[in-house]
Image 1 (tube, one colour):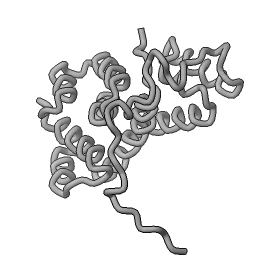
Image 2 (tube, helix red, strand yellow; image 1 turned 60 degrees about the vertical axis):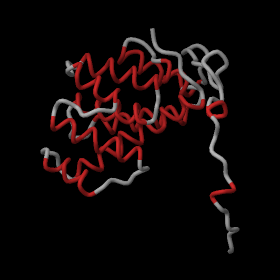
Image 3 (cartoon, helix red, strand yellow; image 1 turned 90 degrees about the vertical axis):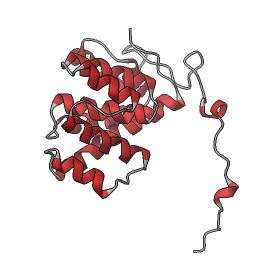
Image 4 (spheres, helix red, strand yellow; image 1 turned 90 degrees about the horizontal axis):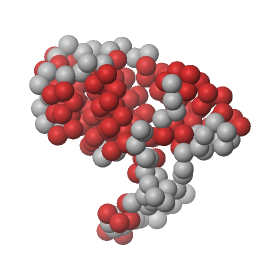
Length: 198
C-alpha cells in the first residue's frame, strides 16, 4: 500500500484561539455527579469520594466516559505502585503538568505536594521552570521536563545525571507511566478546561 507524501508545510500550527476549543464557561464536557453520571461510572465515583472525601472536577469530567475513567484510575493506581516516594510521584506529575501547560493539574499536584511537606522552593522552581533546590529532585524534574518537551526523547547526559543522583535505570520507565497519566488529563483539560476544585 502506498501512502501519500504529506509535507510539513501543508499543516499550519493552531493559533492560540484555535487551541482553546472550549472554556470553563462553555466546556466540551461538564463535570457529572454520582446522580448524573453514566451507570458504569457511578461505582468508580463512589470509590473516589470514599478515598478522597470528595470527587475532583477532573475525575467528574472523566466520568462522562466510564471506559476512559476506568483506564485513567487504573493507570493512576499502577503509578502509585512505582518505586518513587509519594513526594517524588507528585513532583513527576507536577513537572509534566507544568511542561504541558495544564493549570488545573499543576494546581492540584502543587497542593498535594505541599500536603506531603514538599519544600515550597521545590514547588516554586518546578512552576518557574528553574533549577530545583534539591539536587536529586532536580535530576528527576529535568528528566521529566525533557521527556515531555521532546516527546519521549532524552539526552544521554540527562539520563546519566538522573542515575548519578541515585535513581535506578528501571525508574526511567516508571517516569513514563506518570507522563502517560498526565498526558491524558492535561490533554483533556486543554480540550475541555476543568474548573478548579474549591
